[in-house]
Length: 444
Image 1 (cartoon, helix red, strand yellow):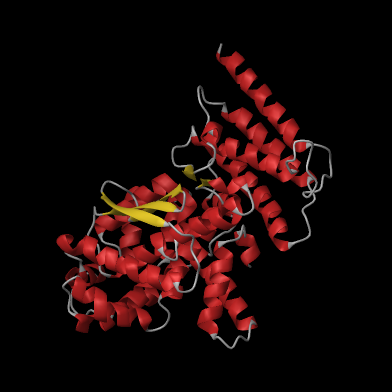
Image 2: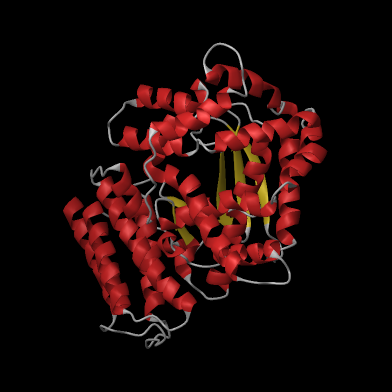
């Protein structure tokens, strides 16, 4: 009976694929008898495929706001059959000649790369365990540089001079940092104040559709510090994890990253410009383990600098957020000087994940490595290892993604001589990236 169900499901998938495929060499601009373009047929089957994979992998579908009837019901389709469907759709995309304009070509490359990542994720669900770099290359279209321990030790030596005394640096750093924790009763006020400032700065530069909005929730028991669950209809649910102390710098970081001009704005613009204006249904679904995540996380992190360039963040912290949190504004400058140094340790998390996923170290050793080279407290290091367990090589999307997005945007800014100034051009290029189906490899 189970085999019969799988055969029926496979026949249905093959029928849908045949409908989508059409003749070899079809042009993207030529509709069929139903009026649908070949890429639109493929896009629908792609969405259905992603949703079917999500039945096997609860973390896979990060967001979906397409037709409810496309959601799978009944028994799961087997992984082997889904892998064949992914391969079939990949062949179909290759037979379509994209139209000449850049946005159509980006769409074509995007679907090819996304289908390739689906195939890679399906192999992992079937038991394949690639190396850290092979996994990130096939899932996220990028690989992070390998940095030696000496790179991080140089930064730690500089930091050590900031905290004279005896005992491990991590202990001295954590003891000093405790005075910058946002008191729990003030957390919601501080976070909403940060979101309001991020939104005001973003909407000044990027037009957003009427009615866009979000809801904030505070949660526990998660391996991440914040999450944006896009709901469709220009709305988001933003969750903030309060398992560990929330330091004052995380208010702007999370407000920008999860909200404005980060994940919320990214998803709103994709829905507005690609789904509603162009009818590209493939963007109604967001598979987390895919090249889209490097763009999403990279723009969300780089967006912090776009919203608060140069000394503007420090000025805002001193005048608004430190007082809102009940902290001494006179301590803000030194705090951010230290945090700028700590930021240079961000790739230590990648190295810990690489060694852990490659089975060169175990969970205990990975946590110890994070404490030593990423300057994480024992509790935060353990939380990060749980993140490795759940999301594996996903960690590259935060720092490598940020660096790739920054290089791409700043390269475009430097090429343009605009009388409005660099900040205006930066916002314009940033908004254009957020609204496009650009891949990580095309950022180079």
